[in-house]
Amino acid sequence: MKTEPFDAAPSMKSAEAQTELLNDALASGDAGYVAHALGVIARARGMAGVAQESGLTREALYKSLSETGDPKLTTLLGVTRALGMTLLAQPRELTTDD
Image (cartoon, rainbow, N blue to C red; front, side, top):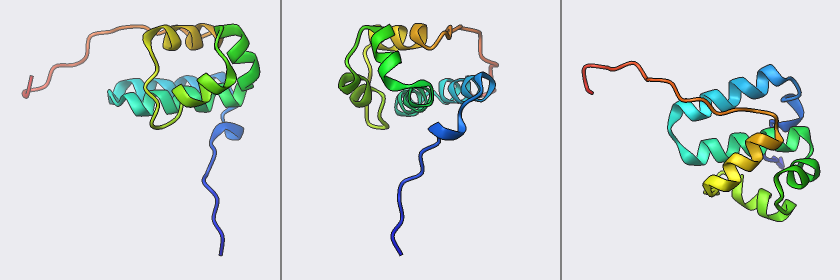
């Protein structure tokens, strides 16, 4: 039996699902997950359009927004702007370990 990697992009059509995915990735603190989540959302919306809006090439976006990608801050800001999203900071709840 041959298997293929799962691509979540086709099922991420709603803004709510995309926002939930990105918020979960940001909350994880895992840069790879954040890059991957942005990549999934960009593919769901159309990578060519996101690339044009963010001022980057499609190839650069695919590379930066892969699970092993590590996008520069300018890429992160450009992509979130192109996706019509805003990143917000909020204090995290302190635990007894903090």
